[in-house]
Length: 290
Image (tube, rainbow, N blue to C red; front, side, top):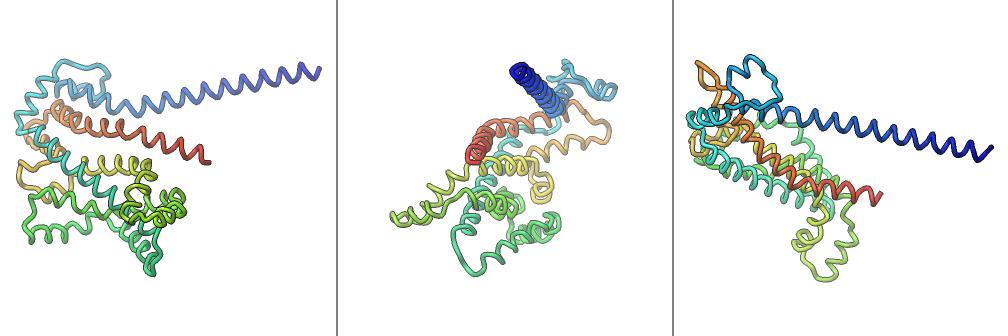
């Protein structure tokens, strides 16, 4: 009798487990569809004409007007090569500066003991609360006085000071970096710069990959700051070029606008797929440690 009850309970538990797996898979599939749907609609609309988009805003089937939209896009002084080049230079180098120097700042806050460490960290948290738009007037005046309004460096160098990234890196590094390893490296004669580059940075790979994605996307999609600082068309970024597509007061070619948006999003998707494996590896490593 007891054996029969035990077998029945085992079968019931197995059935519940299968049902839970089915529910989890269904929810994951629905979330995946909801995540992909906006991108798919954008790509489909880039192949449709303005009339089709105005009559039926949402369609899941591509049309045949993609080449026509491309000709309209290029006819509006839209130069994807220049836009990709400028946006790529700004996004790549600003991401490298932000990730590297933010990790270095977090390393200094974790490894070294100095009197103003806590006030300095509090100052970083306070800076996080100040919107970037508040400081834009003073920043533009400074850039104008030094004659660098059309210089891409002024969109790269400010990324060195990224308070939110410093905060994230510090919180990740605090439990991840063992001081015993640092002390052992010092005893072996390694310099501080080498310890940071060869020990701290590899440990921080998952956090660096995560913040690199956010930083690259933010820099690539940034419209406000480049629009204020850049007036030369040869220095325009992709978001500026896409925003100018709606400048026609007579008619807006929505198909070409969607095509421009599709071209703008493609590098972001590529960067995510390149770096996502490091994020997954970091999550798996954390679960093993736990």
